[in-house]
Image (cartoon, rainbow, N blue to C red; front, side):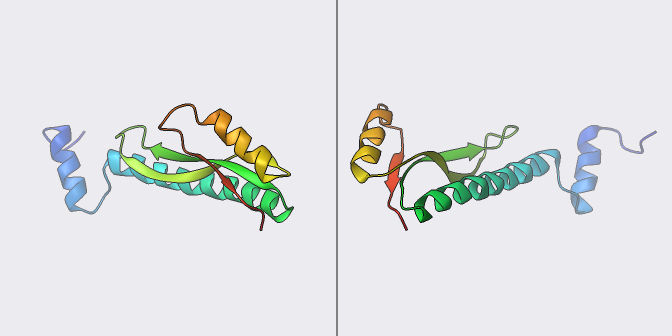
Length: 108
């Protein structure tokens, strides 16, 4: 049995005590997911570039599912190509929408 008269009163008391709200926890999870995705795709991108390949990436924005707040962005690995010409041709195919953000990274 709760000592609070409403859920809002309990949430306020939790906030005063230093507890994070449900939305803050969801946003924190979204930020963690962005870092995980950035690491995963960054590893693939770096590996391909170190092999001398031209890499096509997509800049992806990530939002919190619960709050729709912007949680961050990361470079999504799309494909790797042996030459700049082939990579740029792939980007031209993919960039059909003005909001698309596909680009090419050179080899390391």
